[in-house]
Length: 323
Image (cartoon, rainbow, N blue to C red; front, side, top):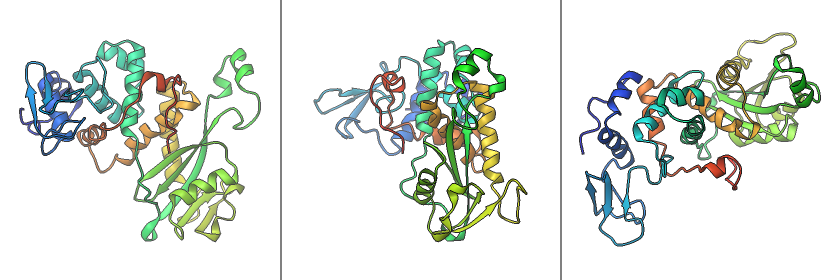
């Protein structure tokens, strides 16, 4: 294989040119998936041989699926779409601040809109952050907690659609999302069933270290958190900032998310909302420490061991509920 670590792309233009070569696509993925040596994804053997004509490896052991490509065991598995298009779409999604719609991807990469939509959801699966049980707020850091509703605005709907979809006031017909952010650290988001005390406080205790400085608004659902946290409240009816007590960092994230939803994606179904949260959270958490090439590299390093079929995406077969 060619040394894929040399002259790697730093911009979208460079990425399009670089990944137009299928061998460079394979090299780029292979050195990240197998940094030491290529191993068979079926049996784990290191005795494999690469066939450059077919761009496949073959395991020396005799077993089913002994021939494999770099796509096997990744979000790209069983896709007839070339890696040049997959990697370009991955670059675009990880670096476009307000996201990119399936219609744009379909037009730019000469795909059907249905294929582009499926492709983007598979990439969002790779962007998913697995927290591995670690909690926010350790070492005396401050944590902001806030929630919001995601859904269409009644004033932007046609009358017939508004009468069908808006059946109450406030957030009754919208989806609730909750954000937990460590100042100077990472942000976590989750879709919640409602804004009741049991739902919100369960997420706080799941993700925030006991004893941490915790800042929320004056929603009554956050009452009694002071028994486990240094909980302080800012009343938005009177002010938005009280010294260090505010949720402005999370408000910034919600504004980015909603600009993407309303301006780019236009309409997001509630059962797909967690995927769009994962996408925006990935870009937000890596906005300072990584440049475009770094975010892309991180996304590509997370494609292994994740699979999303079209039947699972559309709800025709069961899929594991995201944690």
